[in-house]
Image (tube, rainbow, N blue to C red; front, side, top):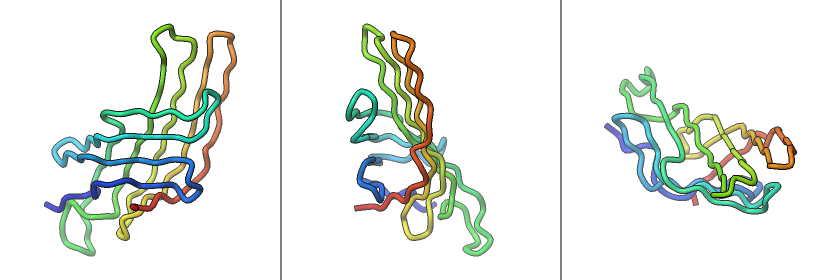
Length: 129
């Protein structure tokens, strides 16, 4: 079975988001690595650990499993110990045959003052660099 998605750091076309894949488990689709955003209501933040998932389909064109294109999701969240806020970024998309990712991002933010922000991060291409 092919070792996809490829390990390495994927950077969004606008340079505001990175998704580093350190391992991808073909038995359960779990991706370990690091997600980083350069901006948010709390500034830049990073999440590390199990930060994504992927799932293959059987490729008729290639006659096998474990090859692109396939679905992929990733993101990160942060909630400090005193719980003054919680922020969650989620990206869902596809890993393509050229080892890029096209994904749509969303963000939700809630703080202890009752501020709620929910919105789109856009549709972006992430390239392996």
